[in-house]
Image 1 (cartoon, rainbow, N blue to C red):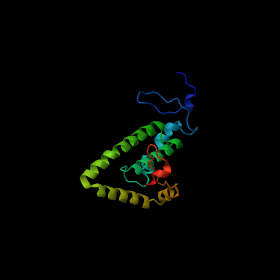
Image 2: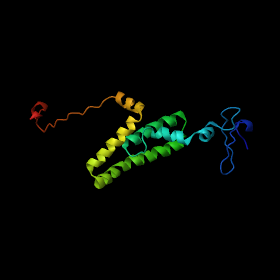
Image 3: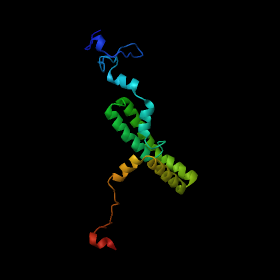
Image 4: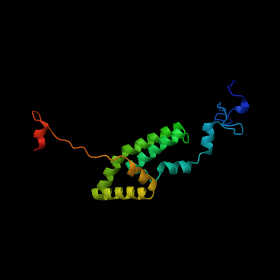
Length: 162
């Protein structure tokens, strides 16, 4: 068996089939490579709490968007392996795609006004419990509605005000 790393400088992680990882160790006193060390030493509860942030559940588009943005950051920092990040991002996409159906069912069951009230309450509670996220949103550029005028065939824009 040939390896680029001497056996004493190689990661000691073994697969289910008994193969040893060929990556170099993180440091001389650490027996694992960086990906295996991160996986072993990463705290899933901490990562999960960071992904959810102020939201208790991923039931709104805002919550899912926040989790996906945080996931991007955690993968870039190397705190979440890219393969796990890809799976979580795909699940986030599925959650976003299903929100319209969830909203439709909730509106049928409880009514339009109740759905909107619940949504406003959920977002308000999440944002008020985390002032850092609220400040971040307040600093974001404000989007103003765009005024659209219909100009029919043969009309000029000045003529369409009536």
